[in-house]
Image 1 (cartoon, rainbow, N blue to C red):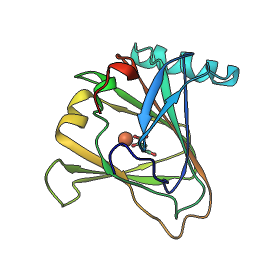
Image 2 (cartoon, rainbow, N blue to C red):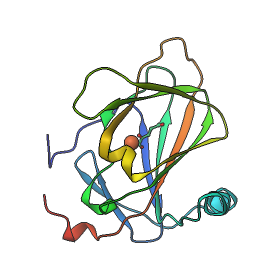
Image 3 (cartoon, rainbow, N blue to C red):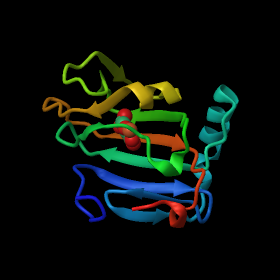
Image 4 (spheres, rainbow, N blue to C red):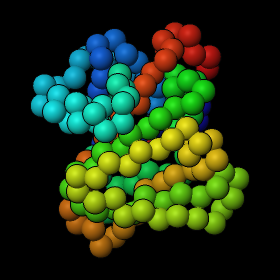
Length: 158
Ligand SMILES: O=C(O)CCC(=O)C(=O)O
Ligand SMILES: [Fe+2]
């Protein structure tokens, strides 16, 4: 699938400083500036973490049937040691982790409304994460994963 676009089982939008690009699902997305209404949240995230991400992937899970599969956030654009700051609104959903290379899930974190999950670079290095289907969940959930893009998309091979 690499290099081709394919649908994802949720709604996705890339936000960030104007011109910051990010590749996901085989397409390059270019941010057009942050929405003003995110300013208080971005300030709070920076105050809490000392980090100033230049982009965020917004994932809307319309209900428990919307999911994200096992992956690591370790694209070259994120640099060798990415911090990922994951903010949650709406329905509580289970965020699952497993050691990279293993099948057995090792951790399950129910991420609730107005929570922030801070993932250190070691999380991407040693673990995969996923958001599995939860048929009983009827409400939607919005997740914003703030990231820092360190390279231009044009520099990224593939
Ligand atoms: O929705 C979540 O909590 C996970 C999002 C995620 O893993 C990502 O955007 O890379
Ligand atoms: Fe992720």
